[in-house]
Image 1 (cartoon, helix red, strand yellow):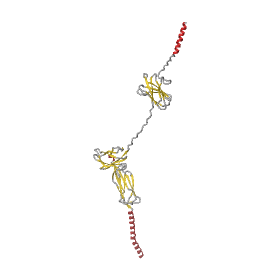
Image 2: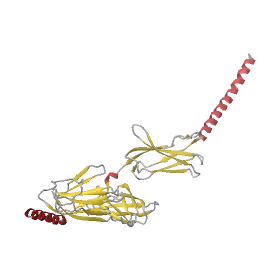
Image 3: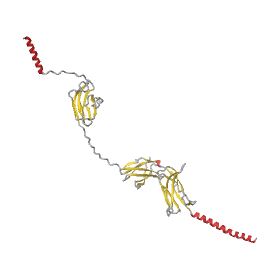
Image 4: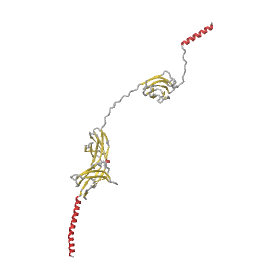
Length: 380
C-alpha cells in the first residue's frame, strides 16, 4: 500500500510540469503565427469624375521586393475586370498605382489586392475599396472641329450645360504630353458658351480637359494635321489633230458626195449647221448607216476608226424643200474632197436623168455635105 501511494504521489508532481510545457508550446506556435501575419492597407477615393486618374495608394509591412497586384473591376450582375496593375514593394513600405478612367462609364467600381501566396493579412488590413464613377461628359458640347488644319492655333470652343456667365477651367496638352495651355479659367457667356484659340507649333493629338467648381467635366481629343503643299503638275499638251474640210452644194435630189482619206488615227467627221442634214456612209461591215439626230442647229457627227482607206460620205437635206451649201469637216483625216458628180454605188435619193451626149462638129459638117450632094444629084 505504501508503495502504491508513493507512485501516485510522483505522477501528481509531474502533472503540473506537463501542463506548463503544453502551455509554452501553444504560446510558441501562436507567436510564430503572429510573426507570419502582415498588414496591408489600400486607399482610394469614394467618388471620382470619369476621365480623372484613379490613384490607389497603399502601405504594407510585407518584406520589400514582394510583388503585389491591384485589380480594378466594375460591379454589376457579374464582376467585370477592367485592369490589373503589378507593383513591387519598396523598403519605405508604400506603393501607388494609377488607373486611366477616360474610357469608363458611370457606375460602381472596386479596387482590391488579392491574397499573396505565402502571406497572411492581419484583421485590420484593408484590401478592397469601392468607388462610384461619375460621368459629366454629357454636360460638355464641343463645337470646334475634332480634326483641324495646322495654322498655328488650336480652335477650342463649345458650351457647358448649366455654366452660364461663369468660367470653365481649361487645360491642353500637346503630342508630347507637354502642357500648351493652362490650366486657366475661360469665361462663359450667358448661354454657357466659351471660345479660346491656343497657340501651337506642332501637329499631332491635343487633349483638352475641362473642369468647373464641381470638379472634372470631361476631355476632348483634337487632331491637328499639316496641310500638304499643292503640287504643281505640268500639263502635257495633247497634239491637236488637223481638221480638213470641203464644201459642196446639196439638195434632196442631188446630194453632196465627199471622199475622206483616213489614216491610222480615229477620224471625227461632222457637217456644218444651219440646215437639218442627213449623213450616209458605208461602215466596215458593208452596211449603209444613216445619221440624222442633231437637227438644223447642230451639225451631224460620226466617229470612224482610221484604216487608211477612203470613206465616202453622202450628205443631203432632210427636207425636200431645202437645199444649200454644206461643209464636211474631218478631224484626223489626211484629206477631204467634194466629188463633182455622184459616184456609182452611193445611195440615191432621187430619180437619175440620162442625157445624150452632143455630136462632134466634124460629123455634122460631113453630114451636111452628103445631104447637099444628094439633093443636087436628084436635080441633075
